[in-house]
Structures are given as structure tokens and as C-alpha cells.
Image 1: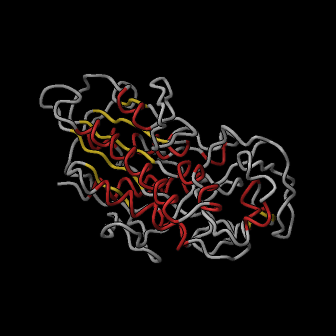
Image 2 (image 1 turned 180 degrees about the vertical axis):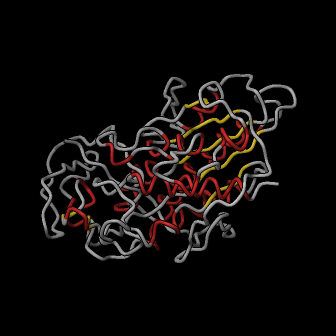
Length: 353
């Protein structure tokens, strides 16, 4: 089975020593059976290609510009307020972009459902009675079928390859350019992105120079910005159609602790997560990616970057049920986590004029 790796970056010490024999190809990691101790599994020659991962970081400072704090939370102590009213802003079409968090999660269990994107459109009043009456269908009369355009795809990245294949729907820019030319407005775009980009930069972080790492981050930010520019260009979805884009930053399943141990199953996180040196903090290595994303989003008045990382800190993979917000792959949200992601977007909607 090919591994999944969240948006985690490591210093060359520690992880590099464990996987140095496998780095020359493409991180030749292979997931192994879970263990009760956080011990790195053996590496094999699996090519590791095509795997999807969502993960991320808490926000923080980075090089090359001012830090922009995403809206909707404070690092280390964020909470998601319960809904009390419908948003002032109204939308007739919802567009969903991004990676597997916005697609079908890990695709391996009902414990991840209902997904945030479906809850945002129509709440599950039985499972989440606090959100009864607070969804796009109820508050805005958005049609749950005709009013939703889903272009998200597992494995999606923001970074545009040098030889970009316009048919590659996993590239965020291609998702954006592939949307219909006309949509009923106002249009709301939501999405999650970033974890897979960080994964692709892992080898560079482990073996490259700071300048080479920064090149990876800059490419990620540029691709994200290109997608945002496409979504918000004048009359993108028809003459006079207003567009608002809500994207999230990326979270860290370990909450910054570097302890990738899935407490509900009492097992080390599967796949490449098991290679991370146990309890080696992750925040300092991860922060520049979210900072670059925030700085890029700030260039577009109709784009708001929402804080997804902070609310998940207290619900990291090493917390027990029922406070754990992660699926057993230690990457994707479980059903409680999906509800929390929905809450982040709903809170973002409430901040709109």
C-alpha cells in the first residue's frame, strides 16, 4: 500500500537519517502495520507516486515578507463559535475546489461522513442539531443539486508544473479554469489546498538549501495566486457576477508536537508519518508555507484565507475519542472534524459584509 504523508517538513537531521536510502527515488516509503510504539517502519522501494495527503501547519512567520494572519481564529486557542444567525451575504451558486478534504477524504470509511461540503449546503439536523436552520439551502435557498459545482479532487496541488498539463484536474489552477463560463450569481467558492504541495517539497527540505526550499514555497504561492486570480477576474462567471472565495490554510495533525500517534487506535500513524522523529516539533518547519499562502491571498480583495490550523490543535491525532478530529489515517478529518471544517467556513461566511 502506498503511503500518505501530510504537509510535514523535517530538518535534515532525524528523518533524513532514517530514510536516506530511499530519498534518491521519490521518498520510497511503504506503509506497514501499525505498532503501539512510535518506531519508524522499514523503507522499501515503492515509488510513492500518486498518493494524496492533507496536512499542514499552524500559522507563523516566514521569510520574504510580512506575516498575514488568516481570518477566523487565533493560533493555539481557537474555537469555532456555534451558529446563531444566517450570514448577511447571499449566494446562489457554491463552487467546491481543492484536495481530498474537499473531495471524498480518505475514501475508506463512513466515519468521515458527512463531508463538510455537504453539511455546508444542507445540514444533518439529526447528527448536528445545533446547525438546524444554518446552511446554504435554508439561509439562502441555494439549490443543493443545481446550485453546487464540485471540481475538487483528491491529490490536488496548487503548484503548477513547469510543463503544465491542462487536463490535470489535480492542479488547482486547472480546476479553476475548467469551471463553467457562466454561473448564477452571486458565486461562493470554497476549498482546501496545500498539504500535497508541502509533501512534494519534502525531499528538497531534507536535502536542499534554504534557497531551494524557498523556491518550492514560492512556486506553491504562485500557483495558489494564479488560481485566485482566475477565480476573481472580472466577469469570470458572467457579466457582473460577484464572486467570493473562502480558502483554508493547512493544519498539522500533530498540533505542532510532532507526535504522530493515533490515540483512538493506540497505534503509530501509518505510512510516512511513522518516520517523523517522535515529539520533534513541527511548527517552525511548517510555518513558511501557510505564511506564503496568507500573503498571496491578501493580494485579492475577494479572497479570504480562513484559519483551519488553530481549531485542530487541541484535537490532534494523539488525543483520545471523542475529542479527536482525525480519521485513522492521521491525515483526513473524521466526521467530527468535517463538522469542524464546516464550522470554519460558516464562521468565515458570517464575517462577510
